[in-house]
Image (cartoon, rainbow, N blue to C red; front, side, top):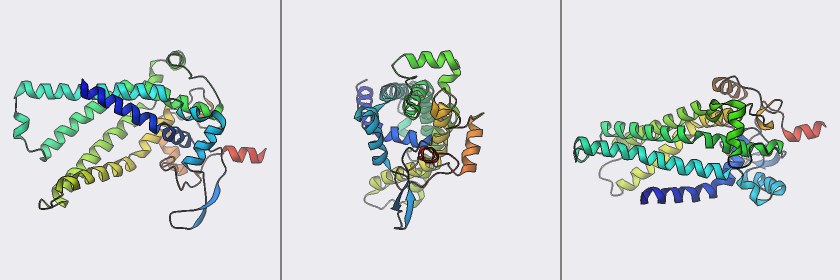
Length: 301
């Protein structure tokens, strides 16, 4: 219990600190660009027109809603993180208890780096993460919708309990799980890619004679985790877009956003527009295609 409590407290602190970044990222993901592009330089030093980055976007939000405006959606996100940590820990604990009941000390006989052990641990981690995602997804949906209200200046999903009532009344139980399938798929694929790549690197690429072997292995885990998250980012984007699609907010309705019949339809349209990585980077951002943006509407008016 003490370990779980410390994990919840640490996770809550990190969540609060990262909330402004998450807020800006979500607004960029839905394609909300209230600021015009500016002439800047890309990573190669070439002059190009770029959309404002994280800090310029955050200043725009603070100009309208103040500093507190950067923390919209924090409460349901904190609830999601705390509940997810508890569920994840409980599932793994049940596995450990089952191992001890079957054969105490059996885990000590198996080599930690063996292929079978990696498969076993990854499978258990997959179940634990999936259970946590399934339980906390309603809070994730509410978090996203609280943030997207900035687009149309709505207050539909304000409060602690009223968003649950609103979603149940308008969309039923399934409304709490909008965007769940691509989110689960992305989590599972990212987990397996990360662990398999880390195992292959640690087993075949790193020599046992290196003095800093443990440190090298930890670095390989971090690198493979970053690589896996990059590859599975489209699932995150599609999941977030489906969570706010056609929910009664301006950010999820035509003409600002199309109505997607399914997450596969959303994936297909983003792929055609070349927007599968929209929001993945908050710096050196090129102008995405396939949408009419706020500054363009003002110019036409």
